[in-house]
Structures are given as C-alpha cells and as structure tokens.
Image (cartoon, rainbow, N blue to C red; front, side, top):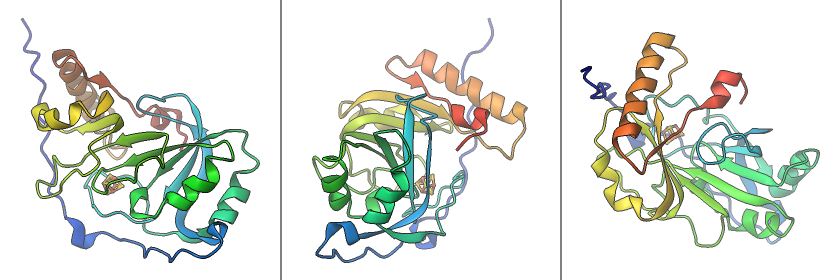
Length: 232
Ligand code: SF4
C-alpha cells in the first residue's frame, strides 16, 4: 500500500517583527467620518478561500503588518490615508453589502468608528487577521483568524475566538492548534500556494494538505480559488 503520510515542507526562516512596516494610528477626530485609515486598495470581487468561498465581497486592504511571513504575497507597504467618508464614496457603486477587511493586518487600526458607521448602513463586516491583536467585542460580524505561530514561536495568538480558523499548512503538526479549536466554528487547512513556483511544486503542497485533511477529521480543505481565476 502506498505511504499516505504527507510530506513535510521545509519551514522558511522568517524575519520577525522588527522588519515589519506599521502605519501610525491616526487620532480620532470629532467627526468619525473624518477618521483616516491606511488603505492599499479597495476592490469588489468574490471571496476566494475559506468558508465564504464564492461569495461576492468588497475587499478593503489595509497597509502595514506586524509580521513578515516568508510566503506573504500581499503588497501592504504602500498606502494612501483615506477618510471613512472617502472609503464610503469609493464603495458606493458596488452593489454588495459584505465587506472583508484584510491586509496587511487590519487589526492594527482602531476599527470601532468604521464599524459604528458601516454596520448601521447595512454593511456586514468580516475581518481576516493574523490573530496577534485582540479585536474589540461586537465590532465585527465575522472573524477569520489565520495564525502564523508555526513560524513565530514567540508570537502569541490573542484573538482566540471567532468564526473561522484558517491555517496555512507548511508541515506543522496540528496539535499546536488544539487550544484554539473550541473558539472557532470552522477549521480550514490551506496549502501554501506560491505563484513563483511551478505546478509540480504547488501540486505537491495541495496533495499533502489534502492528505492532512483526510487524516484529521474536523479540518476542511481551503483553496485559494481566486488565484486560479486570476482575480484579486
Ligand atoms: S501576517 Fe499575513 S499580511 Fe502579514 S506578513 Fe504574514 S501573510 Fe503577510
């Protein structure tokens, strides 16, 4: 019988927080619509991975991150400071009420004003976070934590409850997430997909992650379908 043990992928060496780029938090103005946020880009697309795969969503990408993962394929070090008023204007033409806050690390920002204004307007707010910063209660409708503690043994996951736990699998043992499992309703394993590598390299990661999911009930497979579609 063929050996079905997934092959481990070598963990990359990772520069830690000192090399990260973190935007300054802006002070809170009297009018919350004047609060500024560091925005890399905003676009309307479909959620490509995890629980809401295929669901049309507006994405707001925040600048800056407190980590520096080797596999990170996101540009977050150039941004423009936009007021909440400008953000709302930008979103107005898009016929969609689901917003995904992503980054970079969106939890570096004070998201209360954003939540207080956007949710009463009918928007549903989801956040994709690395989990190292606790998110104030009741400001988000959906919390997806994608921990990177397999790379940063010194980094603590502070957001221990949410809706979705999404782990990029690079060969780590899954028992490191045992303490987090009860805090989240949905658990996903996602292969590390590197666009600079060929289909053999990526296919091997896909197959290894598939075997991990088959051998570890309670975890589901998440694929970055937007990358195959060639959309953001
Ligand atoms: S936490 Fe996310 S955004 Fe930050 S460096 Fe790692 S992969 Fe990139």
